Length: 256
Length: 195
Image (cartoon, rainbow over all chains, first blue to last red; front, side, top):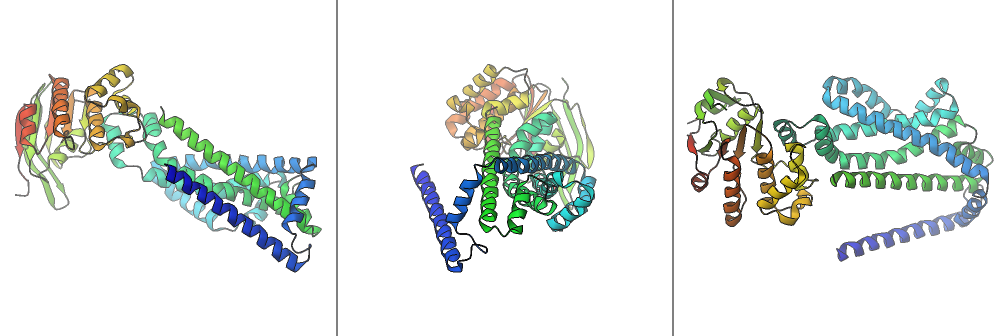
């Protein structure tokens, strides 16, 4: 146990060193270029961030994008899981969904964004785009998890005449744990990337995407880097929160 | 309670003949022990009785609807405790304290609330046995129930099983003649169908 915790500390220390190395490298490259328009130094970006956080618009933009992208993610989580359950039960549905899922996976996100701009208003575009990008990941993982459920356990459930609800809680949910965690881990990052991309192209007023677009328009490299850092931080925090929540839910389930 | 009468039962898996014209009577309220060589169709017969497989030909009469089983493998929900595993199979009519008491009777002691994945093979086997015996049923099927138990634990578990199945219809598959002697009941010897 002690050995395990030491190795975890080592991993954290290694990662901190890697981040420090990346920051130093960034600083050196930016200093060598000596052109703020092309690349701002990390110190300049931190200064820009310090200015931004005191502006009400900053928090407003984060909230605007956060609620839409998170909403898109949760709708995708529900719809993807529901579709997977139905597809596992009815093979015809899996076959019928296959072309849609394949097309969504293969099509560049920019194509969807531009296409959807014709149908939707730019304000809510990020909800739909993050939903669209996350659905196939959740669907594929959950379906794979359900289909790989131990048939011997299902036979046991049949013999003991366990209700569908009990089978769901005691057989399927534990089986889905690793699939759900991995799907959420991958799709949360994708939800943020695609959601912000939709905002950059649709430019809805008051969003992170709009701020990024304006920073690019005015060649304000420090602000561009600062907003990118904000997106990364918010996305990582949200991912950690969701994964922690999932793990806690599973712990509570196991304590039943 | 009726006798279970199996007549002319046959089952093939493609070209492999597993059961050929198998006949047997499992007496109501008694234990029937089935012995036979490996691959002789014992588990296939149990799977047909459990409704997990369909016979190619032959008939089964008197098979009750409520059947519980100790499978050849434990088939437990590994993330949940022994108590939960028993409870989800036997229903909420049977109280938690009764389940706890029975699990303690087979020597599980303090381990009854630990996730089953943390238990040893022998402990898991005992959970599977208690689950089958506590589930209200008119037929108990046991496929090598004492597999993986050490000698002293086995003696204790055999006594527990004997007490629990007294007066109930039970079918037990085993390779061990000593187990048949310990458990009592009638003996049915199966011969390989492809010989």
